[in-house]
Amino acid sequence: MKSIAILGGGVVGLALARELAAHKLRVTVFDPQAPGLEASWAAAGMLAPDSEKHPDRHFRALQVAARDGYPEYVAALEKETGRRVGLRTDGLLMMSPKGTVKDALREPELVWQPALFFPGEYSVDNRLLCAALAQSCKKHRVEFVKAAATRVERSGEVLRVSSEARVLAEADAVVNSAGAWSGRISAQDGRHHVNLDIRPVKGQICAVRADGWKLRYMVRDEHVYLVPREDGRIVVGATMEDVGFDKSVDSGVIAKLLEGAAKLVPKIRNAPIVESWAGLRPASRTGLPLIGATTIPGYYVSVGHLRNGILLAPLSAQLLGQIILGGKTPELLKPFLP
Ligand code: GLY
Image (tube, rainbow, N blue to C red; front, side, top):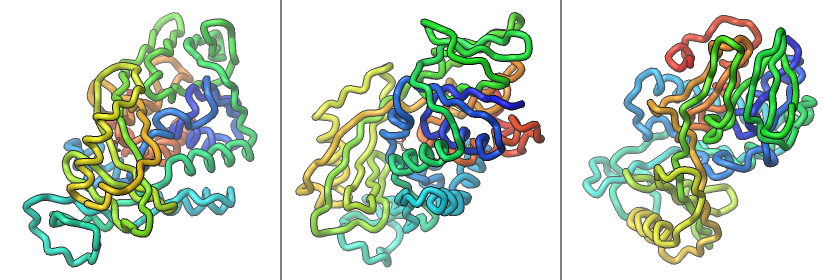
């Protein structure tokens, strides 16, 4: 195999493009926008499997492996690109009004008792991460084409990728990594059709600026999370809304998020809001990702990462990369094969 088309240039597509280009494949990424501008841009960048408490044990194993591999992945990316991506490894405080653990952590801005401290929860500045991945991709000669692919058809030995208007490319393999939009791409080979059942789950989220004070740890409860950034911003998120392709921001909803955040960290009340936005997480019917080959030879998917796209992108890329390059299916991926 020589050429590969990646449909969707979010963090999942970018990480995969980088992985495959490093293995000398000719990679083209198709996206109607510049890379990393949808859910990958909107995310909070939490790498937090322990406090997410996902009930599926196979998914937890994937999350934990992804988190454990992050520092090394980031170190290599930062070294290669000369960019920082804001990885923070201080940990996370899960707060509860009926705290069971005494505050031994000297975090001065907290009011509620931390119920649990998760020292291994990390965060990354997802916008910086995507910029670094895009730079690395360009260095590896990945081509970026601004177009929305909607159709994939196998024709003889190649897969033809088209938009509504025209044929975009022919490639030896195609990966659908189009996030919340991945269900809009239909694929066929004469015998099989592959149409993905992926829907958007909206998250409204905002950022405040901490002037003259700092939050060291991520802080969360069951409703709201606070993710400090290196530059003094604190990201406060996020809603989960099943409302279709709607990215509007409601000031009342943002006010509620901030109210919830101020219960945990009172200084939030006086912190200036610097940004509010919304993004669309990609959700499969089960809420679990689908990563791997499909019934159409050469057509792969990496979709449905929902609340864990930033966390899972590097590992998904490495594992799916192994499959695409002809290796054995990694055990960790077996529960998530389409
Ligand atoms: N990972 C947190 C969120 O999706 O809101």
